[in-house]
Length: 140
Ligand code: SF4
Ligand code: SF4
Image (cartoon, rainbow, N blue to C red; front, side, top):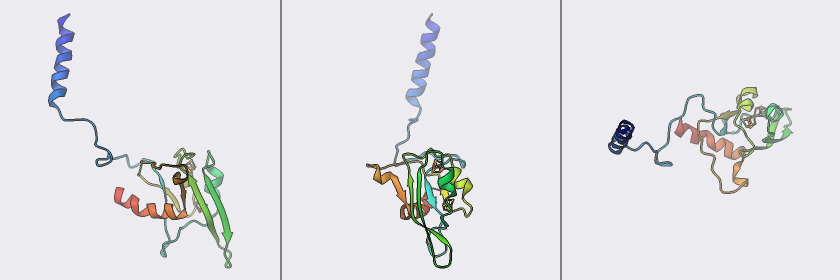
């Protein structure tokens, strides 16, 4: 009868002297697996523009329809995303857009904090996705 009590007390004493197990987020961040599917970014061309060729495959494959694309055609016949918008609230981070992209333009980073104070802040446009390319390098 007294044995479980002693055992419990032992756990309490051990925990009392061991270090904290919590992480002081956001100053401290847990590392994630290399296979982690975090928030998106755009890979860029040499002149800093998006690699996206507005083929529409990511839009077609996205299960929750989280991507909005308005494509335009240039004079040389190439396509360009005039509007590319990814809704972080709708997204389920399945990674299909990354898998299907023929030019490796859209990618998922290892950044996991999806933060915003309004719905509009969580709709990432072309500019935001390109900026995140640099942020994700800082995270790894
Ligand atoms: S990760 Fe999946 S749900 Fe999110 S935008 Fe890409 S295809 Fe859509
Ligand atoms: S991100 Fe890739 S798959 Fe999506 S429209 Fe652009 S080129 Fe096509």
